[in-house]
Image (tube, rainbow, N blue to C red; front, side, top):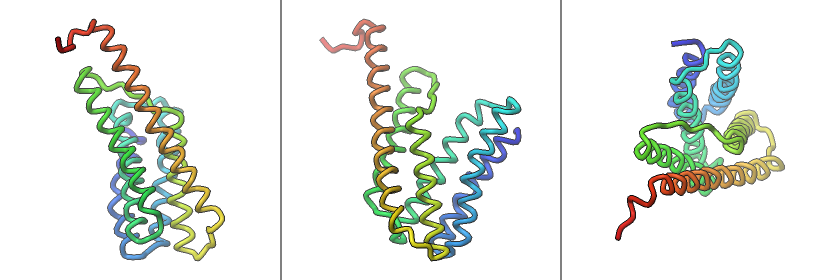
Length: 188
């Protein structure tokens, strides 16, 4: 296992700790662990690209760690009343949609060659920023009343755009696959 994958794995193992810290109202510690996890997402990518350590395992592990971290933080923050439940439902549904779509694609094609879309990367950054801001505001008594609604809107908008972009892409791919098969699967 190379260094970027080890960093990603460490981020994945931080998830239960962050959730526990949020649920027991240790928000300063949750903030610092979450911030370190968020920064590790950038660090592992930079190291992997700079020193040509990109691996297939890392290609699967990195988005898994991101999704696990964000979904669990969002659920914990909503449980504690710091994020609106509707936003958390939207974020969780989008991730379930992407995972379900990837599994369906893999089942149909026997391959999984998904590349993250730019809007999806933007969505991940927006989600991380919102989580860190909420944790910082809660931990250190910072008034985020002006910025939190804007960040919630950005997360909601990029979540919708990202989910829609994946669905449109999969729909196009499915149409191309049906054309190639010549409608062999049609019922007559």
